[in-house]
Image (tube, each protein chain N blue to C red):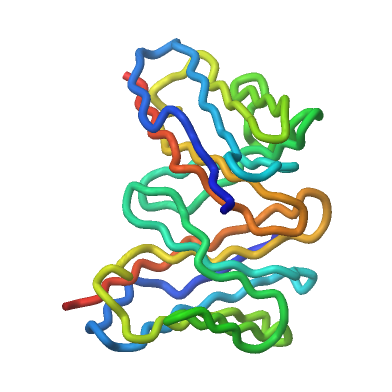
Length: 114
Length: 112
């Protein structure tokens, strides 16, 4: 149980492109989903928290207009990196949880901006 | 600032030994504690959760929690080369959404 699917697993694109990443909970309803970013040899950094049907809560220093999050249903959240630049290259990971349950992570998306 | 500290690593143990991974946290209001395992290039995988003081065992893994000392540890018995990974300690932040604060992780290497 508690499977989280994240797609795509890898993206390589040109600077200025917008990239959408999907996160789905396959066998449970995720009331809350989280988006993280991880640079090489560093720990996970929370970017934002999203609850179904409401606006995401962004962590300090994360630009909400650059990282658009939509959590339209209890099983799907999307992260769109708008006008991506090389410094946005990173490993983006989503997680999802039911109330009072641990977070379970998707497989991550490795984003490379040329 | 809420922090989760893990021992500086990396940690290397021989196959079959016990690996001991430690973590301290600063927020006394924390209520839920997790250990995640992350293989290189992969996303974290939940291996243990613990919510009350004492020990919790699951197979070769034992999580230990001491809220008075603000300390949580993970013991891996009979370590295997496949246990070689980075282990992340995570602590829940009480309140809305129950965000997790992660430690920087400790890299474990099990020598055959």
